[in-house]
Length: 117
Length: 139
Image 1 (tube, rainbow over the protein chains, first blue to last red):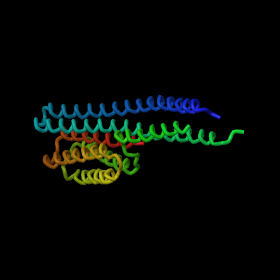
Image 2: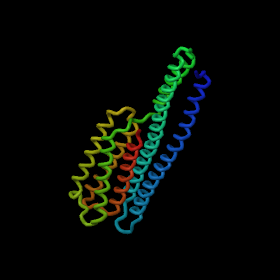
Image 3: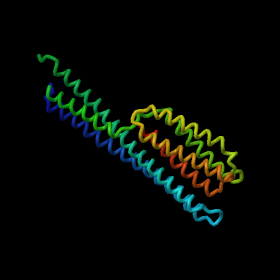
Image 4: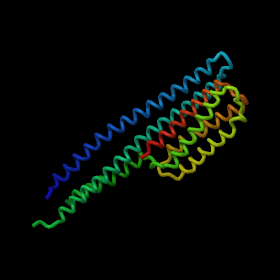
């Protein structure tokens, strides 16, 4: 029969392994997302710049300002998206870990309940 | 053993309370589908202008603006019913506002300039991609 130290060590080892693996996977996903958002922002800023400096029918100053304000609002949305990615990762990780804790704990409890012979 | 169970219970309960503050909606197939459809329509609308370059009139595009607006509105209705929806609703509304701004530019100018098309197309592509990516990453 397992003692409490063994139970806790087992749970801890599984948790630590999952945590490291999860952080590695989520970090890669976050980098890809951020790089995609940054590339899109560059395209928009280049389009705004080209329109403002065009020799033929350039954007007016007020149109340029309006588009820059819109770009900043979209930038804010990008940060919200990254925040949601982190939140979703954390939620998923925590719920998986809670399920894992419960399962491990229940199985050990069942073993402890069994009478020793 | 009872102490261990008691301590674990406290950890579980406080974890749930803590992570509610950093929370996201669950993955939703319909919300993702609305976002993908609207994003595709955005891209198609502005790509067609770039290719043809001739018929840039608002009349040519009005129906497509309506379709995209309808898709975003349906997404907003759906997202309003989801748990932890503050951020996704904010992204939805930024998208809708951007669409209305692009439509207003087009209506005001009649035959919108290619410069404006490039700018509005890029901005709508940017926010559409953010919305799709956000829905894709919900677990």
